[in-house]
Length: 442
Image 1: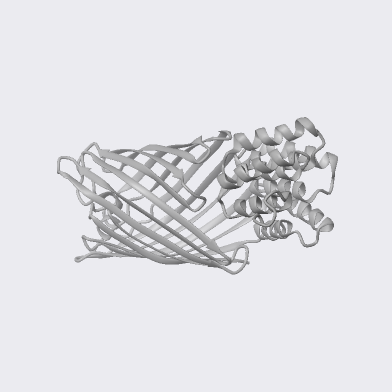
Image 2: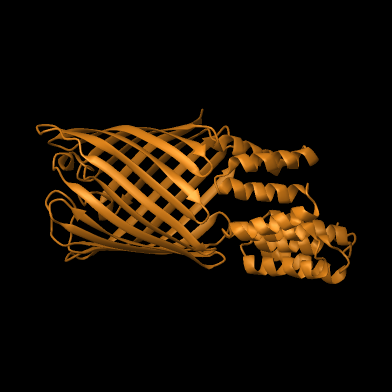
């Protein structure tokens, strides 16, 4: 079509639009720029260009493009809606709500604004409001796919759900674990979700075995930019040849997003150290305090930081820190680097407790979804140093395959293998995991 009529503006627009759908954003933007220069009277090209900038993660440029459109046409409902979407994708829900409401003040039944505002309410844990807006959008456009999806998501969010997991792990010191967990959760009020978990575990090594059972109840509450989580429970630990005990467990966390590009978190937990058959009988308990932060340093670049202190009931203490930088190369592929360090005040017995452990890793992840199927693969290659031993190679490979047959209902297979001493409580170098999990809406 371009060869037949190189100047045809409709063909140019369609070509640029298809390029944007194919995630070839730079090419699409260049095509839109040439079309705008050729046909400045068109209003659809600047709108599609701004939308493509947002899809490409260039949020500041997209917001500026929508702002330029509003300078010429302050009542442009599509531009106001697009600006709301940019704010929403950056986590600025207050800004998104303001922009969507401004659009709806000009056209109270504009479907994209109704769906956009409904999505923000859904992310905030307000499915009843999201459901109402989805129905309003479908009243104007019964075939609107985004509104149909939002309505299904909002309905699903109010349904209780079951989560079942069967897992296995084994390390090169022949510590083997099986675990089975059953959890349920339900939205009991706007922003408030209650949950409960029960599970069993079987651990063994070449000379001993142990069983464990656990139960926990808790709730999470999201309001504004803050999310609070609290839970309490108990575990029953039964080592072969040893006394059974039932220590209490509890945990709490606070997550806060003070700005669109910054999130911080703080958490505390108390639980028994029961990762191997030997440790189940060790009667060790842990108190762990952890802090984390994530920062979007650029539209496609994120920095994650974390650190913590863990106190052992045998008097030992562990300090740890982690930093990871990830760059999105395409919507499916990300690459980056990670460094991790941990150290113990005293070298313990029966668990991995070096004076200092350091890991440096180059990493990559790939995610793909098509219809009901989803695939995620990740890997890393680097070096680890266990003081005072020489530096050694470290690597990991992990994957997850899932199939969804409803909004909530899904099943996933997962597995991994790594050569990383810190992955096993015993400090074994090779560590394998595998399992299956299912989520079922009630």
